[in-house]
Length: 93
View (tube, rainbow, N blue to C red):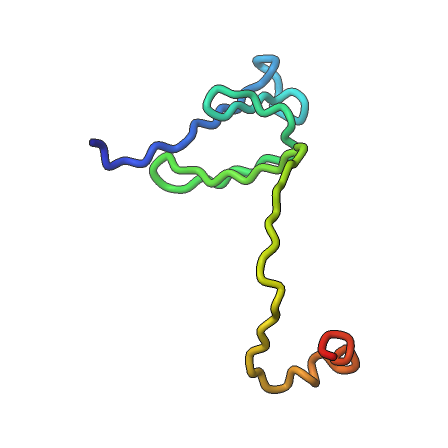
């Protein structure tokens, strides 16, 4: 079995070959699947063919959130009264 990590393949190309790759003229694919809803793409090139990619996308989100423990634990911290000032009464009754 191989010890190497398999990274997803990101493909960036021009819709019209020979033109400058900006905005709507750019197609982005991740493992062969077109990402048409990108609003931002940032590439940071590192060693050995590894690149850090930051993407911003517009999507519909369906999230299920389960309620957790609603109790608040206050650790002993000196000076927090001075930091919160007049807001202390609003947070701690």
